[in-house]
Length: 197
Image (cartoon, rainbow, N blue to C red):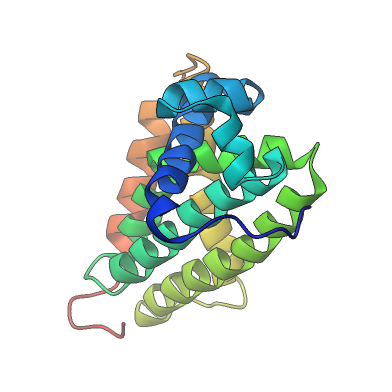
């Protein structure tokens, strides 16, 4: 990955527009469609500007990943501090950001720079998710040796993402039942009002 710094200052508006355009193309058409020409067209700028701000496509993809992941981490921290952290875990992994995250996971199979970025963010996400799950399970007296919070949070997050992925493919069989099942158990084991944050 390039180590060259992108221009800064007043040019940051264009840089942010390119990051947003790339994310939008990835969501609507998949990561393979996110070429410098396609991103430039989406952002309404000349293709040369893409490489002016991002010397390589890896630089651009990493910037998109970092921007989205930092926003999601902040959203996650705020949501987990509210009254229903388990429901927040489900909802956050069912949102549009989950679809973009999966595009990055697919892209990581072909780009080493993306793979290392994803691994770092995944650890940070999982730490927060595990902590939220642990608080709720402990508040209900659940044996966390038998039901490890990290495993339980992975199950909830993974199922939510699978539903997003399948919906994108037009698959819906079992989705309503899975959502009802998960919500019923989230209601049962949600952090009690006034419980530990």
